[in-house]
Image (cartoon, rainbow, N blue to C red; front, side):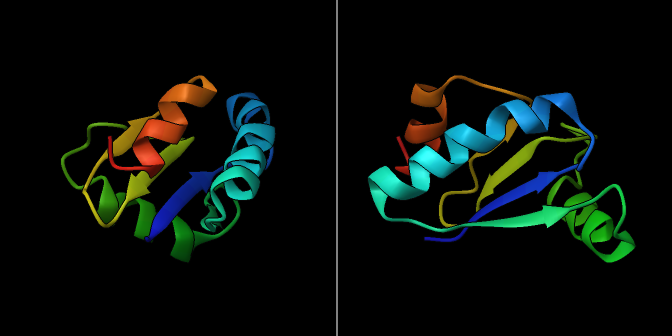
Length: 87
């Protein structure tokens, strides 16, 4: 499973998502690959590639490479979990 998270260090919505991502990793035994985009141009280019349709345009932005499912913005834990489990 290839789960990606694009975030900004100072982004309050990203900070709010951090404990939910950590919980997800522990409960499901998965790894969410994290890419900081506000201070890393290469990571921002990667985010833009995954958001080629412009549907999100910012962070937090989550991509499930296996299913193509995306989440834009902060969500509750159940939504995050369903995204990770391809539901």
